Image (cartoon, rainbow, N blue to C red; front, side, top):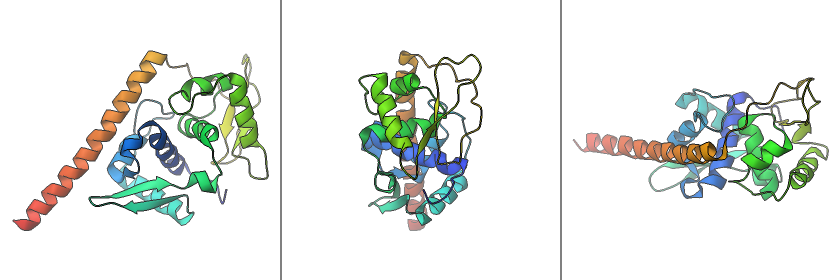
Length: 211
């Protein structure tokens, strides 16, 4: 990894990874759709309230690192990540990195549950093996955190925003599967609405020019 990324850059990359896997029909993403994804209230920790300028600035910084790039389409500029090549991600590691970027430190069991819609793992052991591969090498992407008081399982964190803290904080409560499925559908609808809003804005601008 060329440098430590800031919180907005981490969120942008996590969202691009997530939408590529969860809603490929809307990927690559327009700026409007990416802002909506960054500000989702479901499957995000912490929840953010980013402006277009925040996300655009992060995209330009990431573009300079060749971690993202724009894709010109007929109706709008869209953005996609280059992490499969830059970070050498396969399907299991891509899913794990996605969830870690979007939700912070988690146990292997939590990661298995939350990766289900992106890449199903057959067991917690498979998750741990994939995490071990991501933690190996001269530039590891993840690290195992020391157990906090009262914690039965170790948690893992990504390293793209710098070294992990010395002590881990308590993990958030696990979201029920039914609620998670509903949250995914709501997130997809929010993304679609953002796409439509962008189309309406461009159409209004064209009509104004003709008038």
